[in-house]
Image (cartoon, rainbow, N blue to C red; front, side, top):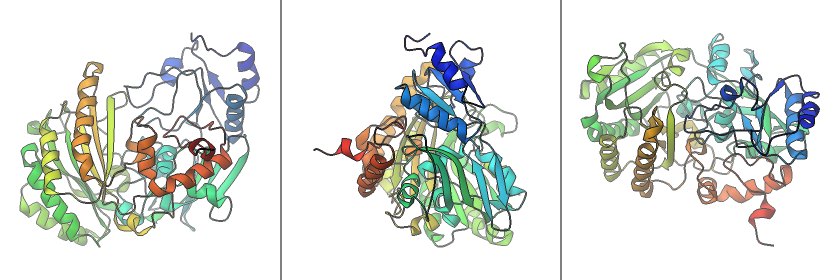
Amino acid sequence: MSKDALHESQIKELTAKLRGCVVLPSDPGYEEARRVHNGMIDRKPAAIVRCMDAGDVMATVNFARDNGRRLAVRCGGHNGAGLGVADDAVVADLARLRGVRVDPEHRTARVGGGCLLGEVDHATGAFGLAAPFGIISTTGVGGLTLGGGSGYLTRKHGLSIDNLREVDLVLADGSFVTASERQNQDLFWAVRGGGGNFGVVTSFLFDLHPVSTVYAGPMLWRLEDTAEMLTKYRDWMAEHEDDHDFYGFFLMQGFPLEDHFPEELQGKTVCGVLWCHTGTLDQAEKALEPIRAYKKPALDWVAPMSYLTLQSMAGAGLPRGLQWYFKADFVGELTDDAIEIHAKYGKKSPSVWSVMHLYPVDGAAGQVGPSETAWSYREAKWSAVYAGVDPNPGYRDAITNWSRSYWQELHPYSLGGGYINMMMDEGEDCIRSTYRDNYERLADVKATYDPDNLFNVNQNIKPARATRPV
């Protein structure tokens, strides 16, 4: 047990105020309860509070603050840096706040703070609607949205934060507020991209869009074709700059040894594009016809499918518990030199599990001003991630070094910052470069709503008084 363990009297005091329960290091379920998606993270909280409602969240925030404890907030546990847990901290686990209420008439969804993307997709899909989210169904809505949120619908409908109407939050003083364009506007501006720095979001209200069947799936080529196909991908995206139904993220990653993949691809790293076209079938087939004709893919699984099926596709071969090390960039232009670096690092991949993805973040997302939300890189064309991945802890150094080296060589070709949801614990300089001119305003909002920086287990923005000389 940690030398900094909570006293029995403290636990009794907290438990008396909860509908949910508290999981302690001595409890049988503790080891499973403290796990997050990234197997590289091995942290031991003092207590994990399984919150049932906003009242439980308020009690947990008050308890952590009053007892001088660090407070971590966990939704889906997908954060690369494992910021949903911290050693000797109190964890507000939102996994049971999973209600979804769809209003098909007004095309909105009220989403609990602990919901996973797939749960919302299932609820909204029944009405032929969807919210613009990420690409892996087990990701938490909360962490994804507060960091910005990009995915298959980004070019058509913007980032997740561009489709957010309001949030309910528990603040550092334990109070409960709603933030929207009509109330607490400064707070609403900050949570749209500023991460979990300002409070615990217990519910989100999203705008929804008609999405049911899409023309989507992976189109893959040999790894040796990376430079050629990434160059063509750059051209294809430029040709469809104004066609926001046209989306595809470029990838380099491997395929596990599973029977449903072609034998010649199993256990090998490949390059390719995971497409999603939201227009009519005729429009989609016409858009992808010259791509198919250019070079015969080694695998072509692009076909009509439900949006729900697409949303569950990307994470199918990446189960919980793998070791991950992330680096990230915003990219404005794919130069020939940058493409050669991508091809080089694809060949140097430390494991078949490791990935490079280039997610388009232009189109509708690029039509929002850089200061309208906390997300400042509205001029970016892509959000890039370089992630060393492997199930074996013995490969930790190899995957970390590959990701870092990859990023170091490519960063000079980037816009300067990176997507906070795809970062490890990078430090204040990196955070400032991600928010650029928005950072000081975020620090001011932080000083108003969390002056003592209770919410610091995140990509932390320090309160203004702590960031400026007196």
